[in-house]
Image (cartoon, rainbow, N blue to C red; front, side, top):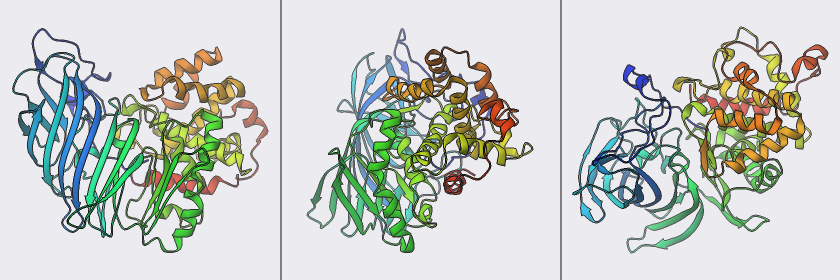
Length: 506
């Protein structure tokens, strides 16, 4: 997970509906909504159209940080449109809609407002071509006071959550609108360009530069799309035991962290195979991992098919716990995305629980032991218990409580409904919501359907009530018998991983 863009809800934003925008056909063409209606980020996403594919074709110069090229967007109008918005911060040279030049304006809050030459009919197919050239690291390009583009000594990192796309391609920037992607970036020889999915080609250009082309075949949300440009001296291209493309890359200055990083990331197919036994078939077409230089990124993120990790995750030795966390997001966060950012615990609670399951598989502590030890080790007067995982607010979106109390919530659920129902739920949920988005209410409904129990009180206690629950995640019997006498072996590794994951959000 990632870095939090700071945001304070204005009175106007608070009035906006918490249910994400659903457009309907109007009596006459009208502008699409400037946002998807997310209560945390009201201007993220847009109304009036649905995207099916992005073709992003760029050139990037690491020396000047100049990014230029075109993004072609294939979409369908979901209402009669006189105007629509794209989420984008950079300077635009031209916009064409269905091959005709369109009028456009850019606002200070990252909205590219496009007016086609003629209104667009409900259901119309749209081909939108945006040509642009600019420097993403320009400090003026901020959303909510923050610039997510990271420039490095040898290139750049377009990696962040909840927003990153506006700094490098125009989009409908909300997890509820997923699409397939072609990402092609030309850069000088001596640097690598990494992105999601499969590496389609590396082409030598006339000027000596190399064009790297990547393709994502499964629906992908915008914050899970990334590019890394820089010197990655150790680039490994192979296949997994089940035949999937498998690409790992290690930055050129990891020092003593290189071997621990390799000892962790090279085990990604093994971790993925284990997670399949818990959550069902892996939902994507490729695997891998990218490790950036120490401190360049500062966190790890579940970029689809190929998570990106800061080298600092491996300064205490190998760390497969963070690999289990990020690869679990392929099911929880990537394939099944949040319907709104209030639902973030559905991503982080499950990724945390995957670490607990991986720990048990390695004989280093069971989920029950880890959740109970965590519960017991946090005093009741700690501010940790004041953050509500079910609605933490944008400033606490990646707080420790979202991870750890989210994971404890799942253990409390397992205690309440029993192992068999819980294991069924772990598989049914990502299967039913595959390649879509989901809410906490929908998860509670499925948990009740699978278990045959009424669970409102349990979820209200663990997700929506401030204060330490009176009974721990293993129930009253565990509290009376003090079943956890010692710290589980994996606890410190998981704790360190979560400190780094949450650190960027503070």
